[in-house]
Image 1 (cartoon, rainbow, N blue to C red):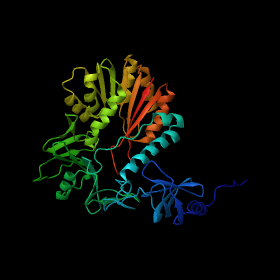
Image 2: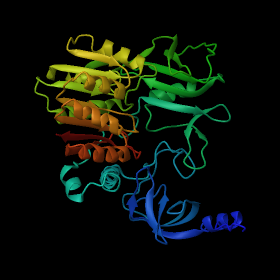
Image 3: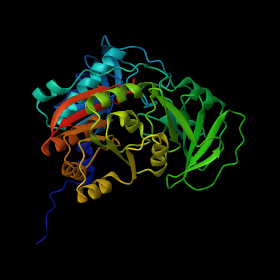
Length: 436
């Protein structure tokens, strides 16, 4: 007997799936989503539209249909929000640079919208009740500088050989002539660069607190460039295996946080808004509530910034960092402290060894990448006897997921303190505090 197929013919399926593509629809923008898009509803489906904000009425062209999710491009603005402002940058707008998403929104409104997005993620992804969210989420701490605050700018090569930032739609690179969130010294250096180095896929300009500029090339093959420069800067490579090679000048930048000089080697991570790091560190210290007698874990610790801030208010600190250059920086930055142990290794493996050896800690600080932590890490932390966990997050979605994991493991969520480290963008940094 011949078997019947229940599948529709390929062409029929494609037509049905993309029936809305290219259509112009009228939309009422109601909310802001994680990722920089605003949200409307059309035919019972959520429609995501960039460069708009809640309270606006628009017409938009459907550009992508994923079934339950639709993406659209704004065409006409019928009713503008009172929070709409003119963008500063010529690269800002539909199909252009996507490094900034909020330049069209008044800064005070940006803060409120980010707070709403954080609460929404805790509710939808973390499945936290509204009563808990309302009681623990605090007002977002504003940035001290809203423009020119980034001391680190990473660029990709444009087809013409120029350097730029990713575009919003259909990929590609926007060749950069200006950037209003980057420190002016970085843009001045970029304007003077003449780089002919085909092996470089990315380029980072990094400014230290002393004003010194470092150039970092990320290469696909180990071919050193022939260099000549009259500019007062240092040059470093990051090889395919992620190891740094110094070519000219110093292999590191120096960042001053709360009167403490922190060394950051090429390839090591430091938040680019250096003027706001001290504010973040203060919020972390408030969350830790250290009295001086605690044994503390500092996980995903980078170059040791938070350990340096904690050092005088803890009995013992065990710092864990997987990237060797960053661990070396931490050893240098914390060289004056005898009560800080530096462990180079993957957090999950190190915690497993600690738990196997019956190690005990009172407090843990975790500052993971945007992907967050895994359930195994939470289980290992439980075995160490923690009474308090402080989680520094750069992504509300992974934070919300991990909040659920930590709560299910037996902790209570005490506070959620967002800090704005990236004005004009959708990014939100958050300090969440849990107690056993």
